[in-house]
Amino acid sequence: MLVKIILGNLRHKPLHTTLSVALLALSTGIIALLLSMQTQIEQKLERDLQEIDLVLGAKGSPLQLVLSAVYHLDAPTGNISMAEVEKVKKHPMVKQTIPLAYGDSYASFRIVGTDSSYLHKYEAKLKNGRLFQDDLEVVVGAAVAAKTGLKLGQTFHSTHGEAEQGEIHEHHDYVVVGILEATNTVLDQLVLCTVSSVWAIHQPHDTESELASEHAGHDHEEHDHEGHEEHDHEGSQEELTALLVKFRSPMGIMTVPRMINETTQMQAAVPALEINRLMGLMGIGTAALQALALAILVISGFSVFITLYNRLKERRYELALLRSLGCGKGQLFFLLVSEGFLLAALGFAGGQLLSKIGLAYVNQASNEFHFSFHYNWTPSEGWVLLGSLLVGILAALLPAWKAYQMDVSAVLADPS
Amino acid sequence: MLSTNQLQFEYPDGKSFVFPDFQCSKGETLLITGKSGSGKTTLLHLLAGILQPSKGTVWIDGTEMVKLRGSALDRFRSQQIGLVYQKPHFVASLSVLDNLLLPTFFGKTKSAPEHLNALAEQLGIEHTLQKKPAQLSLGEQQRVGIARALVNTPPILLADEPTSALDDENGGRVFELLQEQALKNGASLLIVTHDNRLKSRVQRQIQIH
Image: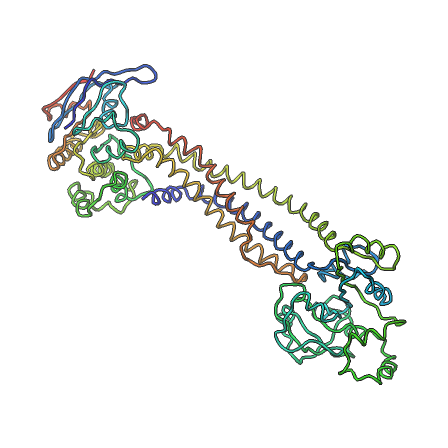
């Protein structure tokens, strides 16, 4: 019966109720959307950056290097020479390095030359097929396969650069030999092959015969490509785009980056530092939006308050009647607070709907970043729920208190 | 059934009333008369436990009302006393039927549907049950108000100026309905009024100054 009374009252003034709910939905929706996006971006940034202590690349903006080499979100700063890379690999502090060579793409997905350690780092598993071994064999990430429909055995041409339109390297066919399971990391968005594949593509075309004779003595199927790289590199012009480095101990971060920045042609960027800086910058933007949303939340609290307070005046006979029929003071108080609570709950539900729609819209608009937000609940949204319920209850407190204090006799005796 | 002893009430603004002692037995009808402002409604509210007396006490069926407080008092009132007002008030957003069920909900009494239907029939409002109170005529609303007072078959019926705003015919009808129902349920009926037309129809009367 109490529920009927509560619902009935909210339905009685549909316009006021709708306004309050709409304002609450708007504010909680914005806050939830921002929180969800921020949490997901932070999680993704941290996940991809695990175990990468240092990134080496051409001199330029360290943030660009990190974005480009760790997250594959930006264009590279340039190339680094294998000679210098070899020196770093031999440094006693260095535990593991992963080479990256890129510059081409397929259907806007980046083609990256690397070795199997890159896949092991992200614990990638093959869904179909096998790992690349020869040049021009590729393994594609889960999202790439899903979007482009590439299948095992299929061949394709790469496009120079990152855009969908560009010069197509028509002379070389890539062939898909493996497709990865989704890893929820940057690998999902990449097409992976050997480093030498990338070099092969970019050799000028009239030296093809030279290449052919150079490799005449080698049987490619039998070589481990690591070995192949090693003996060719001293004195060759082959370059990498970036090198991912892991140290044996944290001491490495103290000494190595400075050494590289000051004594080599390369720059060393510490991903953790750059990303923290980026998140700090991002934080400022979201903070401004959140402040706006909070302002709307406060206003919606007022709206709930005004709705309930006004209704109180109109309802005083009803409420006095309920008291005379046996409704206790506390019950009446509870009734009114529940109305605020219900308005807040409805507002929150509406806000959830709005924020999911918002996420869908963002997913669509940011297609080029190949990052989609999931719709699941993030823990920070729990705070949004608590906050909106609190607003609803607070807004209802004064009207509820007035109802509690009501002089029943006076109201009933009033002849109007 | 109902009796008062040295009942007095003082309002915060200084206005105070002293009421004569009286009794009302089961099945009896008592008219409480007096000019406007003589404290009739105050007395009614004291009898109903809506106001606490400054001095004195009210006894209902062996229970001393002043000893009850809070939810105990609320429930006692709901079960033992039916209130009829001059102008009936309802919960506007609920149907007539739900309005009639309110006393059972708050009084924590059971309502047998047959009882409710019989009551509705007797008062000629069975066709209004699913409507909203605002959709009813004034006469129908009044009869719903009476029905509501009777839902828990309380032993005491208190009516505050039930006929004052009505014409001779309707006023007479309402009075007859009240008497009828009181008789049926063996309840005591106390009517507070300044309506002279009732004075000739009720034997027991007390006057308040």
